[in-house]
Length: 333
Image 1 (cartoon, one colour):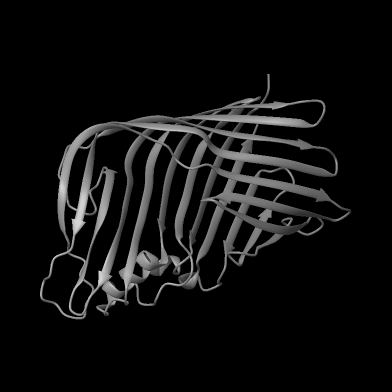
Image 2 (cartoon, rainbow, N blue to C red):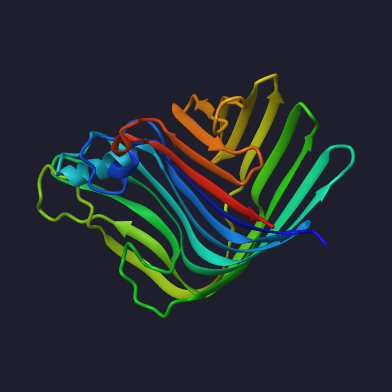
């Protein structure tokens, strides 16, 4: 009978394109830069393997905010009490958030040819979600910032209009797939998270309508207290999360390994070359991702009992736009 293995895995990756992560989640003191995405993916799994079968308790928190530069600039001006820019402002904001936990069932296969495959199925109890879009056009006049925007919004916490309701229940499934090839000198792998996923919310609040600005006799400031007209109801809602994929090629040399990682998320592909030194204590790894300018540092042992990762684009984490933290621990008998 195979020996059991107990594991603990934690992974957190956050990217904020327009502003540093800390500032984006607080008071906007500086004008936003380039970029139209802010997102975070967080996973915690603790469980056990017995041979090629595994089970774990899993917790996940996902948040993705997509916006255009005009909307980010408009929000900054409102935060600072500054006058709006001239001309029409196309407003766009899409929010997608999920908090859930549940049981993950895992199965892995190894083939004599060097091919390997793993499938994870998570049976989830969803706690919170946001799924909505604001889309419209605003225009600055001499003494009035006017326009309208459409709202299509489902949620467990109404962050816009303070809708009160009974908390809906959400249940669903998510499937992760890992496949690849391994021999003595190289490893090729592809991990696809949320390859298939679906969360069903029963009687979730739904708000649909339009914001129209009104003159509040405040000159030379952005007017962001619009009148809302529309309707609300409770509906069953099927929610899906975007695919996240990570591909890796690793080539072993005499005393080191070099690798290339390709990360896909939010319609963007990031490349990260790296190198690991097997002849040094802790097998240190150093990688660099060009578009986020993030360095990734890692330490691990030869038997895959423990692993630590830290990634950042600025050593002063208060100014970081990209942050990765990961750890894994395993116990064998």
